[in-house]
Length: 437
Image (tube, rainbow, N blue to C red):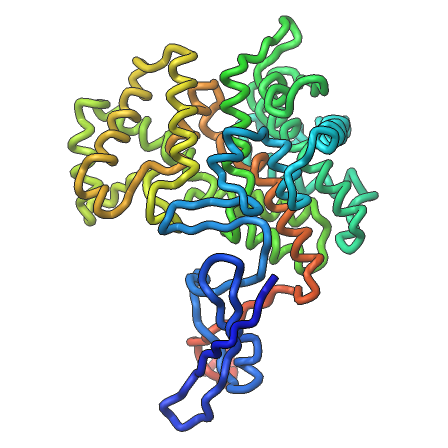
């Protein structure tokens, strides 16, 4: 709840224009915000904030990040506690409804989600329209958008019951769609969901089982997958979440809004970061591996080299990303379980981690390994191909997008998003006849 502060901000102009008092609001935690909604009406001026570095676009009760402290809270609960004590579907329940479920609520929610895991059989024919070598995110953007064509009965964004059904359907069907996209690209038959498995276990089976033999999920790997989902479930007003909110603010259906989020997440600066990180490790490996890592680090430090260190540092966290600490544990657990500590690529990754945590250049700039660095390594170890990483991120983030979208629609202050601009182009001029141009 936004609480008005007794303190007011005063905006003064040196050109003699009248000054203006701006209300201040306090959140439950985090910086105060200055309310500038009446600024244009009273002064005829806008604020200018490319990238929204200092702008709160909404009020929210879902996720809180303190980048300086390296803190991430879902509905007030630290991510460290949720990742250790709760599974992904409990986290989904928390994000959607505001509280952790008790045992009967958990059982009922799990049952509801797992009852909706199948997708319309027509989806297979839709998939066939894609080339076999299409990027999974291209396929996912199409499939999620297409869901609004299959599920007409839950597309009214203003109906709370429809929003609820759409949320359950999206959470339930995303693993099926990701696994179908994967199976399609490798030419294997689709594996239908098996609803007596856990959410992560079911996903692993749909990804890696074949009809010719029984698949037994490995508990360590299933737990690692579940943790990847939990750590990526929401992350406040990032680019894709803001896209979902902006798209949803037009009143479009939830499937279309989530498809917009998938498209935004695809970018290498956002969800594609773990893919970019593994590609970087592959490049170092090809150019001499661990023996040449010193040369690579030298290039990273040289601003003119154009070589970027992917999977380190974060736009928000100016400290160790709390998700990275948890993913690091999982990473070592998975590599140990699969006996991959001596795999050349993983050895290289661990060497890079060591340098980044000890080298003064990286320590001073707080370029710690982030969640993308470790989750990329874990996913590769599990056997997930690099181009599929971002699709798995989209699967995990779907619940956060839906929770944020539903919160926005229930907010009495919500309006269609409409940023302003500072226009610096040509002023009004006349069109000359073609002969005089």
